Length: 354
Image (cartoon, rainbow, N blue to C red; front, side, top):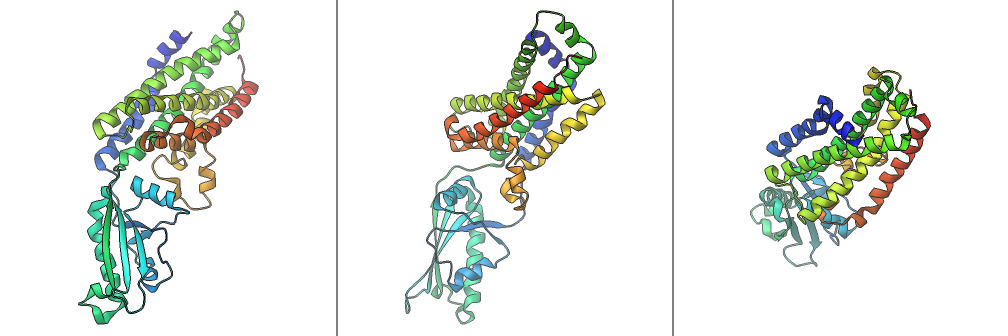
């Protein structure tokens, strides 16, 4: 039954398109374009910086500077390491009578060196606006020094590839499972199975194994293209690659449950795409596939954080770039498994032989 199901999948053009071609197109586009952004400089206040002095307050109103607020030092360091900010700005007011009046230290990431001259120019412009009488003596108000931290470059592909891989697993698992089981029911194949000693669990398991084998092959292709063509980060090499495949297997298992639900409630083959899109499209847009969910409005973020694909994408990015182990993303996995448990409970209720 596994062999027959694999043959069926391999002969389905839609499986190839949704499973391989569709995500690869996005990876190639973002890989070649590099995800260019408009001119803005993302910064954060360094832990311990004097944020109450006039100089710092002036920096807050500079349109080019996009300030990111983080709760602790670890979060700021993570933003710096992953390239979410160009630098942290540490502004300290000197004692009375000491020149310059302010000491400004930039802790910059080595991967963002191209933006440092622009950032220094912005700071000098603010310095001159603070005291017009010292236009020619900028150093009298604030001395700006730069400290560069050597960190790995967080490339566009490091964010895009896990999102596209996760969506590929989601779409392939849901569409593939829904169409296969509906067609088996419509052509009375399931009804014939009902008259044999084959149990329902065996049918579901064999289809699940076949679908997982195909989707894991897809994962290997997508990760391989990203790694060899666009230098996608696999921090621990093969071990990271293996952990990504384990996460992919968990995602496939969970997402197939939604496919079983759709195949059970669909009244006709034409009703499957709208039902499947109700599940896949919101996650495609809101689960951090293209953009970090931190960029969404505050009211939308709880919705994004409730979606199962969000946790698969998050776990893959942590494993691939930060080098964490499977155990360290256990909460992401537990939430995924909770979704899977609910999905299979519902699927068992709506399963029909004909």
